[in-house]
Amino acid sequence: MSRLRTGGYHAAMTMVSLLWLGPIIWVVVLSTRTFDDIAANGVGSLPHSFTLDTYRQAWTDGGQLQALINSLLVTVPAVLLSLGLGAMGAFALSRYRIPGRRTILLLMLAGNLLPPQIVLIPVSKFSELTGLYDTLWALIAVQVGFGLGFYTFVLHGFMRDLPNEIQEAATIDGAGVGQIFTRVILPLTRPALAALGALSFTWIFNDLLWAITVVRTEATMPVTPALLGLQGQFVSSWSVIAAGTVIAAVPTVAVFLAFQRHFISGLAIGAVK
Image (cartoon, rainbow, N blue to C red; front, side):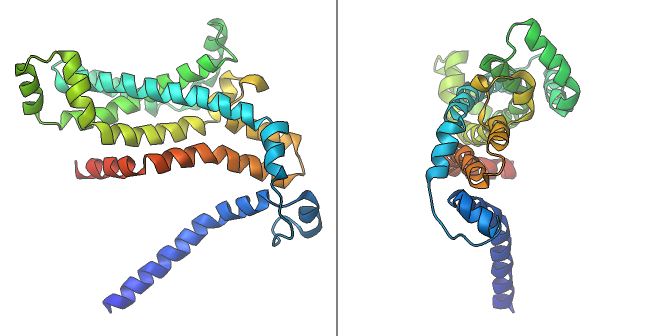
């Protein structure tokens, strides 16, 4: 009976995995087909051709190279700033008795409960007034501002559960606040930072809403809204559009694979706590 249940569970999980991987495999296969093959046999047919020229078209003619550079120029600084500022805020709120710290934390978290759609116009107008509209700096500021509260809240939970004896021992040894933060607390919070880093990289890199709110020209367009332009440029070339989609997915997959061990350990710690 136990073997039957185990076999049924494995069969069910296999079906779920295939159901999840099916669209991904279909997009990858579609990206390697020629236009004539798709026109003659249809998008959903089995491939009768193979080409990588679609990736060249998406990379150069479709502007995916510049879009990827723009996305990385936004995502990397935004992730580093968000985690750095969030870690400093969480450290202060979790390790020291600051008056009203619970209220401060709740107010920071409440900002993430606000639907972003209702502040699109104010954010756009504010970026115009400050002269940052249609710049990558505007997108970085928006991503950091709207994500900082969540990152601080999550890191606060990890830092709060660290034993006070560790900080007290460092203080007795003559360590200052900065040394305690950088040499004691941050290393112990590394799994949480890695997990948040992988998640925030994916969220910011794949963002579409804020990108089309504060960015307008193709020269500053990140990769996700650039895919919309690619679809308009290659209206009937589904293989080129699929190739652009695959290119856009590579950085996030690479980051997840690189931080997979830390990501899983961070989630496990969070589950236990």
